[in-house]
Length: 507
Image 1: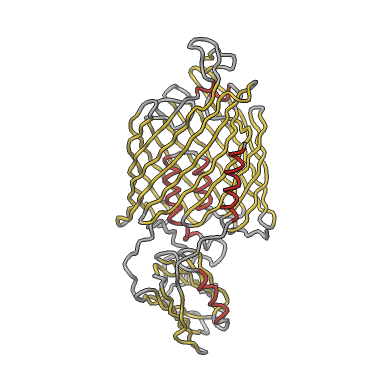
Image 2: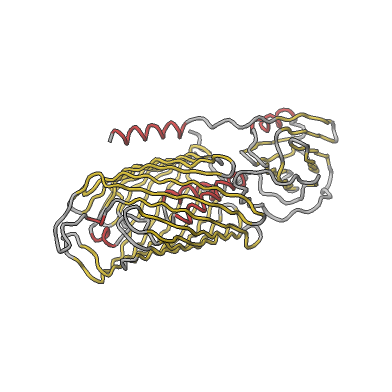
């Protein structure tokens, strides 16, 4: 357990460490009297603006990440005009302390903002209704500069989900990785943190897997998060797993034909939000007559994330054989995803596992890794990319059982596996700025088994921050799951609904 403790301590430093500093930026006041305030912002190229007359606020989207400390000084310097201002990575909000008309003009290295006092409703050019759900560009590359413009009357709210647009690039990255690595808990957490950003939520979903061996697993789930106070929440889930197999090895070493099992499992515990994108959770696990516990930690920002998972006796419901053997898994996972620049994102995770079955708490120990490297670029209305995804898991220590031939055998059909996949992807809006289609395809090789094609598609509907509906399917000539070999076809549907905005704890 010493390596577990060392890695956990390392992650704790990441979890509680200070955020990285943003690039230099600043502002100067060029006009300030009773009727007009004009501010010149430097090193802040502007992508889009949206004004909200009802809230007397202006939402700003920048080409790149900006220094939020400049915004922190605006309200203090000009309280007669500005009641609140802040910036988070590539988005910001300015709220006026009196009724104003907002006007903006692009400059060579930033923009100018003019606030003109008004008594009644402003005469402004209407903007598209609702928030603009930014998909990219993944690297924040500079688009053509906008013409001088009047800010329209519609805008995303300056609180609650105002951070949502800042996470557009990392959300796109996580979404494509989750499409290729279907139902992977690691990428489910990364995408969920970037997409939902809520203090309470509910979710439903189901995932279908069919394997070359004839094994079929349908896993359905429901989860919830209910915020209590000061960042503390109750979290839980209920899962239904329906598994069938033409032939499955039973715990006594014999085979059962036409096996079919349906089981419920679940979790319940507490979550702690330490900030807008730093969280930890501790839950109890129960299923298939196995009781365990799981601790997870997450720290992220629009350019990166870190994850930690410490798991003891999690019921293994992945395959018909693991269900028949009342299997469980102890696991340590530590991983990170990072924006390297120029449209390039990368991830790397290491894990160690102990597998057990009923009557034997350790039938095998494994060590493994997972990594990805993805480059994406905007081609007009299409986001195109190419990616590498790799997974490895290697038997470090295992036992063998005897039973019906072929014998002896390794329980749970555990084996060395090492997969390498190269895929190309295309993503495009289908409708408005809420419905996205992702297509991908390529080649996958398992060093210890077969190789062949991998391809799939996903449709994701995000009508507003906190609302997420996804339908996707994937086929791979190589199974990406331990305990299965050969081709794998999977498909699933998920729905998540978040409530309110990020909650900041007082810890």
